[in-house]
Image (cartoon, rainbow, N blue to C red):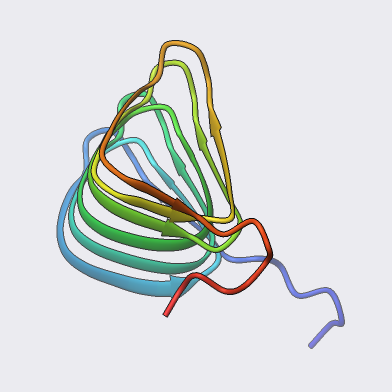
Amino acid sequence: MSQNVEKQFTQISRSMILKGEINGEGDMRIAGTLNGTLVCKGNLVVEQTGNLEGKFKVDSATIAGKVNGDIECENKLILEATASLTGNIKTKQLVIECGAVFQGKCEMNPNGEQVLS
């Protein structure tokens, strides 16, 4: 096996609807619907067409779509201008672009202590 192992990547397309629990490593891009729990040691990207409902724990996330539920990010959470997030946030860094909607509580940990359990 080579020294440069390709990073894992998962994509949920617009036409996909998933219900349940996802656990894994690697980056994930969601353009479809996910109802349930996601625990991912990687970066999460929720596209404008993405719709998530449940609880989510990731290393970092960029959200352009809709999230209804709690999200924990080990590093940085970015809410793009088209994002809508209803739920609680735990993260080290938070970026909210003009136009994004956020309703809930936010707990930030800028000292670098681990926020994920």
